[in-house]
Amino acid sequence: MNTVDIVSTLAEILKSKNWKMAAAESCTGGLVCASLTEIAGSSDWFERGYITYSNEAKSECLDVSSQLIEAFGAVSEEVAKAMAEGAQVKAGVNAALSITGIAGPSGGSQTKPVGMVCFGWAIRSNSGDNRIITKTMHFDGDRQLVRQQACDYALSELAKLLEN
Image 1: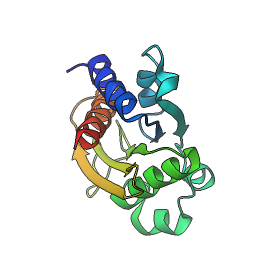
Image 2: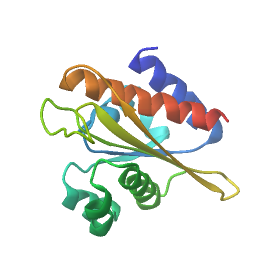
Image 3: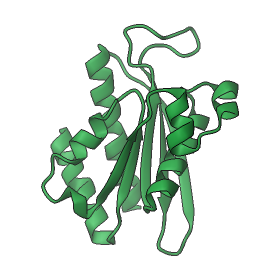
């Protein structure tokens, strides 16, 4: 499924629930938000996006604690979780996603190689129950391909989570 189809599916799910979403991005640098706003009428279901590339931005914009970043690193499920929670709370939405990773071609290490991307999804039901899901994936390819795969994965997983 291509990005436009993924976003269209997600849009239909959000509209059917009368929900809005937010996105918090690091390594994708706004690619998710750009993909979401390619769909006409996205203001009906997309509230806002945060591009928090630096550690300071993650702390200032999303309330991710600097201690958490120091303890686990910016590319970690712990930080992805905090980013998703921060975006959800700040935007006042039912659903939020987050992406933090190493798109390359440099910046990787033995334990966190290029292509490693951590995701977070925060989903609050109408009854007030909140689910937070995190996952780490590894993508192959150049910088643009890693970023695009991360974008598509984050959006398609959110759609799957909202369907359940």
